Image (tube, rainbow, N blue to C red):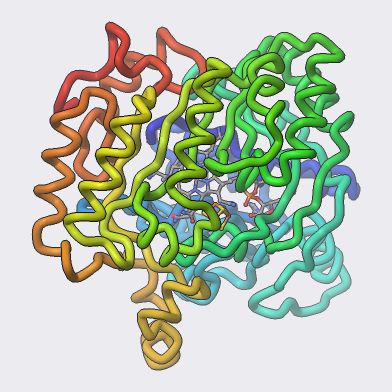
Length: 438
Ligand code: B12
Ligand code: SF4
């Protein structure tokens, strides 16, 4: 939710395995009404020598009613164990965040934490030599150029039809360390950039396959700004008619970037704003002030770029006054859409985890307990926050709340998706935006 996203991680790993000479077969659980039976039939037919499972999401991190996925993963893992004696390996972002918990819960043999393309090849080589694998393989950070995914491995056309976007990566890493964020854990804090020409080669190939909307999956597309600008310039030089979007930080020093983005086809961006109140931004370690964020947002607006700001209410330092300040500032920006989250999903290894005493509790606790989402809510607002945020969302037609199910109804969004490519929130405020409660 809200859209199926093309499995670019497993596609990269699969391409690397195939390039290394392995005979690789695909099973995409999202493509089957009854994934368990279809997976069992696939394993019977293929008789694999190793099974690799990619796990992207643990839950949707949306307080107060997070949706969970790990029970679905268990159903597939049981099929592997019932049907096959082959070594069973895990990987993916969800696995990398909670490796011990997933290994134990799913009963797998081993798993790769981090970037899987090289580590998966090495693991299969080791198995073919009869070696035993360590339970957890911590993959080293790789250097660009990264393996480009073969987009035919999974059904790219179906993902475009039902999700409205293809995806691609232009770099790995984020140099910041916002207190709750898992991205530096997953990708590292050293930025490793693909060469802009190679990025645009991939975009060109996507465009040639008939897809003209792309989500750039980088942690932050406009950091460093020079890399984003070089990609835009190359798109403009080749006159590639493609529309792209991605996550942005609401701050920047390069005055020409918003204009370049718009000319290159980036007409809508998702901003990791989180709050528009300085004491909260400071506690989160966001690295920008309210003034900077508002100035940047206005520059994007002047360039004609639509914006969806993420706001997280209930962060450390939040009070009713900071909530009111963030809301008033956001209203002043008149964004196309706002995604209003409540509370911070706490992940092991983040500064927030350590701040809450996670290291001590985690050392004594049961790793399986980490699969259940735990949220940080600032005490000063914890009792009233759900009601308060519901009020803010209900009063604004362009605010979306996944946790409260506001303007986030799966069936309604599916209907919209049939008519709109690109990001769905870009039509909020237009005639077929979801009404209140949907
Ligand atoms: C971009 C992004 C989005 C975009 C995706 C756009 C698109 N069309 O692709 C959007 C905004 C739509 C999005 C939405 C959501 N996202 Co998101 N997203 C990301 C982000 C930043 C990058 C994902 C990505 O594609 N990375 C690039 C690929 C190449 O990396 P990868 O998949 O990790 O694969 C590598 C390794 O993991 C490994 N690997 C992968 N599979 C396998 C398998 C094996 C066997 C092996 C050995 C290795 C291996 O090798 C790969 C190559 O190196 C990550 C955070 C991050 N920095 O990773 C969050 C992240 C994946 N998202 C997350 C979440 C929660 C969501 C949402 C549920 C949010 C919400 N409340 O709506 C939705 C769910 C959408 C869905 N349908 O799944 C979480 C998942 C973990 C969790 N907390 O449960 C993450 C990790 C962020 C976080 N909060 O911690 N997301
Ligand atoms: S919130 Fe954004 S800027 Fe901050 S660490 Fe995460 S990816 Fe980087």
